[in-house]
Length: 224
Image (cartoon, rainbow, N blue to C red; front, side, top):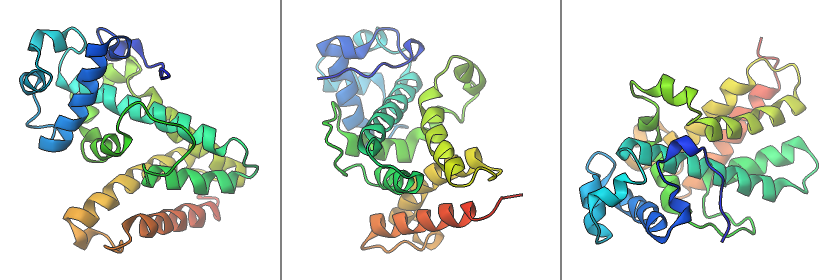
């Protein structure tokens, strides 16, 4: 088992260091996936792990901080996974195409074994991650580095874009748009199908094609 190094401000006590901490994180993923973040509480989580709320509060200040931790963990893991999988690829285009596949499909094998249920974690990030920074504490959380892993991953994509087109004016904007579109379009396909054109039977393949179309079409222009 390996340990991902995360921002120490994300937690009060590192959950990766203890059996209870790891259980809190693992069961939080299952519970949020089951009932949604709005209905999720530390009381319900404590009952699930056969413990008391106070034990969870020793690790996380509140449930929003726990969500931010889960989102940060996901982006750190995905960055690690993509870096490993693309390490031997030569061209920026190849790396971008494979990166898009990893963003869309959490079941795609990389040769690495995750410590957490990445399929469920991916769904939580897709459905709940906006709640981690659309709140009144976002500026302070940003100063504390809570979103560095997400920004670093988007920066990886932006850097590859500039390798393909150094004069492209909006690499950061396009990178973050691509990542968020990957989440939103799947959600739309499952719940609001009138807002997407994804094939309902081949959502992943259809979404990858769509994102490739947007990204590489945009990179053909300077964007000025």
